[in-house]
Image 1 (cartoon, one colour):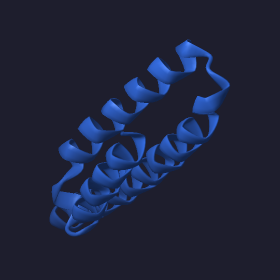
Image 2 (image 1 turned 45 degrees about the horizontal axis):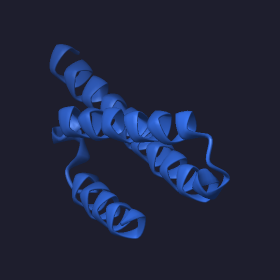
Image 3 (image 1 turned 180 degrees about the vertical axis):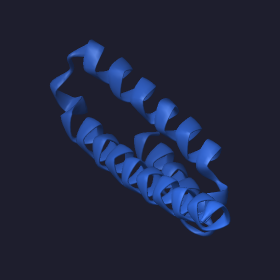
Amino acid sequence: MRLLYINQLLKRYDSLRTNYEEKLEEIGELQIEVLAIIKDFENRKNPKDINFIEILDFIQTELYILQQKALKKLIKKVGAYNG
């Protein structure tokens, strides 16, 4: 079940990487979903969940980086229109 979820997350992440500046809202939504899952598993305090949590944390970090890149590109685009 966990591997299936990770596989689905990675597919969604991969689809967001193309034209990421146009998918800023979707990136944020996926980040929120991943953070909620991490929090849920951390609250369970099951030692078997540590690796799963670390993988989710990595994916969340990648989403954060993608979000920052999208914001940076969006700011440059808006600056180009105003400048």
